[in-house]
Amino acid sequence: MYIPELDHPTYHLAMAQFDQAAEAMNLDHQYRDRLKTPQRALMVGLPIKMDDGQVKVFMGYRVQHDSARGPFKGGIRYHQDVNLGEISALAMWMTWKTAIAGVPYGGAKGGIRVNPHELSLSELERLTRRYAAEIFPLISPDRDIPAPDIGTNAQIMAWFMDTYSEQVGYAVPGCVTGKPLAIGGSLGREEATGRGVAKVTLEALQHRGIRIDDTTVVVQGFGNVGSHTARIMKEAGATIIGISDVSGGVFNAKGLDIPSILHDHTNGMPLSEMNVGDHVTNEELLQLECTVLVPAALSEQITVKNAADIRCQILTEAANGPTTLGADAILQDRNVFIIPDILANSGGVIVYYFEWVQDGQRFFWKESDIHERLHDIITAAFHRTLFFSQEKNTSMRMAALMNGIDQVAQAHNLRGLYP
Image 1 (cartoon, one colour):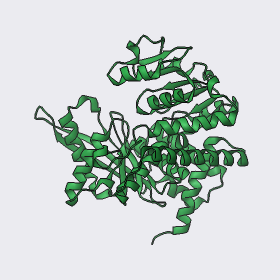
Image 2 (cartoon, helix red, strand yellow; image 1 turned 90 degrees about the horizontal axis):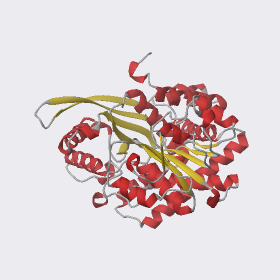
Image 3 (cartoon, one colour; image 1 turned 90 degrees about the vertical axis):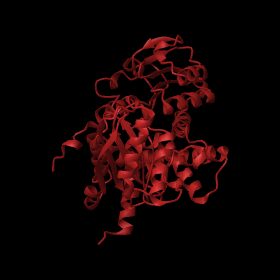
Image 4 (tube, helix red, strand yellow; image 1 turned 180 degrees about the vertical axis):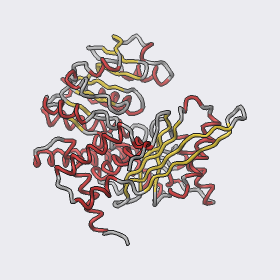
């Protein structure tokens, strides 16, 4: 059945990746349709009163892809281009991501079609609380645990947690993750995804026999994930030669002063206004010669149109779906080592798992414990994927997908089919 809302490039990419992996692993056909179809998808209209007194209706979504391995887990995205197709794809990728990392979750994703920068703080709060109330029947600490994503933050999670708690009559910190520390958040959460990206990149450099002090890094996207990736890679000894944000990019062959740039960027200065190197477009930035390229912005940035011009040895996918299937094949032929998104950016959900566990225990860990446990889990996942890739003579992406899909299929097989 054709559903117009699913006709989205990101959705088609997720489906094509699944089909390719399922065929390569000879997945039993009884699981193929089940794993491609979400368990549940909700679309809600969200009427809110704007500051000028008008009522405006926004569209909200929550897609729960698979819960065979545990409660649904996935972020909430506020962006003007959000639609059901994109959210469905991201929910599916979250299922494979949690399976690869070995955390006991299934995949979900949510979002609202809105540009959050066009709303006042009070409008944003009213929208968040209305959305939380509308999807309330689907969520709980043991059923579905939302988290921040593009366009959302700890404050939005605080409003979400408060709305849920008001519905049940008592405080429930574990109903969301990514909260402020004061109401049950976890240390190490803000940098978790970027730290995970950096950790798997360092493992890949070691695998390829590349010294860290000979490593140059380009990062597309200087938001939460990209900025922490750049900072941690620089602290490890790499030279960051290129970064970008929505305004454009900067390049300096001698290396960029990431702490200074991060300070100015955090205070509102776009990279296009900084005098720290040569200014380049986001497209030109992707084509810079470097050891490591980290796309940490939006999906489908590397396509058949520019894949031949990518000049890196290692591609670490910090964003979701930054490389199309056609580009993937070109990069594989050119011996670019790709760390796929569902492995590379899993540090966020790993630390969200830690937060969920801490909320359940009412006992909170030291930041050093968070870092150590994140390192252990994500590097173990990297080496499992690498071993599988070498054993099956397949790409890292296919190895990650096949491993994740197999874990979920095993869970379905063991649980059986109800009724």
